[in-house]
Length: 251
Image (cartoon, rainbow, N blue to C red; front, side, top):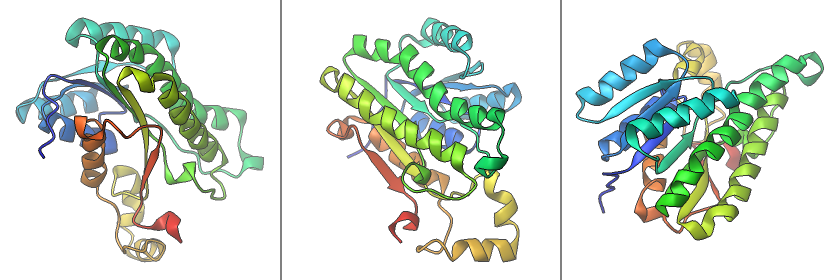
């Protein structure tokens, strides 16, 4: 069955590059109107223009999703442009590879705010519109580090474990209103962030030893999963988290 998101408006935070951009392309290809949210206007413009050139409808909205004031403004601007959105993908986030005893409070708060606080603020801003529609899809981009720990990832694990908890609680709050809330936990993917490892033959070979499938994930694979979750086909799927990691966490 073909996924058809025609008539749906999707807000994607961190939507100008990487997984956010890939998901924007997939949802746009299925007919959704895309509202891109990020801070880099140059990247936003490039992504918006590519979506339009491919036949889609899209616009970008600049702001800091860790700021309550910015989120309120963005929500107002999105609704004025497209009406209340039906789909929200909380994809914004940063990382910090530092051992706990060496991390500053600023390091910790920066990572937690970018993934967890932002998801709270943006969901709070857009879920009421979904309640009015009687239909909605929220996807929180969790992580394999919502399920396992790694050294030097304390801030990131804290944020992503918290985001998984938020996913489950919010799913129960809105389940009777036609709104689903789910997480996607990607494993290592071929994004810009991982290019230094991918382009280093020795480091890349060592890294791939940890992946049972023997390769990096493709952003298109994550995007296809997001597209399914956003469709009517996934109406019975809520309050869960889908790990798509090439077998990493199975070991």
